[in-house]
Image (cartoon, rainbow, N blue to C red; front, side, top):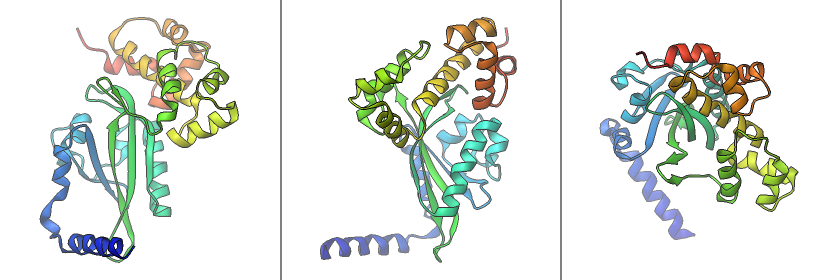
Length: 253
């Protein structure tokens, strides 16, 4: 215990002696697969690594400085990001392994794991939020915050167009339905039902960008009750209607 305290003291001393212009944030430009960001107390971006700003389609970090989530993302996504940030500013506690839809380098929503931490000043006051974002799926290696659910999550991702019984998923991992729902939400910060819907929305974005299938046909093939239900869920998670998304993102001839 004494040795551990001594080691931590050495670490604290080293960090305290780092010059303000050391630019340790540059390190994040060289960590494969990691997007890094930092926001001030007004939740405006004040730092981002290259992977982060390239994903948003801008030419440099300077193009993001001073902007907030509502200027960069669809309304619904921005609201979710803001909710987590405000909680961190209020409590001073990090939020880890947040499973959420974010944008890949092609502008498509995909599953990402986000970790967010409070930023403190020398007085111990919270002055902002910083975090990292990493793709849930990179190549053939799937990353899950809780490996116990690997089989259930893989089944959801492979059969999201079907009518899935969550009682079957619970049996798959050896849990009761109530226990499965509770622990799934603890692990992924979302319910199994929401995970399935978001996976359908993710697939819908790709179809809307790359095919000319009708909205009603997409709704049926992706497992939604009808076109109205599809449009409602799509607007909730992406911020616009399926038709508006298609008009904005479909490649021009």
